[in-house]
Length: 123
Image 1: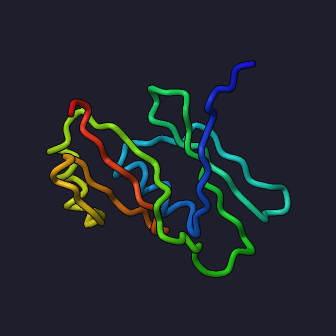
Image 2 (image 1 turned 90 degrees about the vertical axis):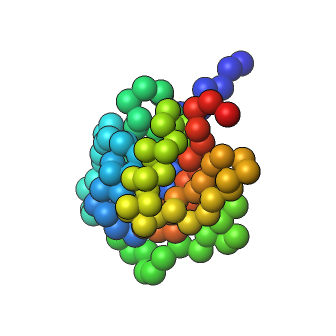
């Protein structure tokens, strides 16, 4: 028996705002979208275009308010080939929420408060 990682899911309050963020901050593109017939939810699978793993962004019509992220210890991590350029971009976007200079990595925060780890390609 073999399992293959398909996608990770996060719920969002504003799908279009989240799609813009993930495109601008991380170069993610929409791989596919689905809207329920009754309009109660919409999902968008986003991809980096080079791996098979996707992130599923789910918007729920009846969700009131933001999501409780607890201590925000869960996160998604991205490896980047140019950490200095990425850091500069994220600094301009004002989305850096934590830096660990001794480890050479940092985290950015998406519009819903999810943390995303940015790791240099070679450490």
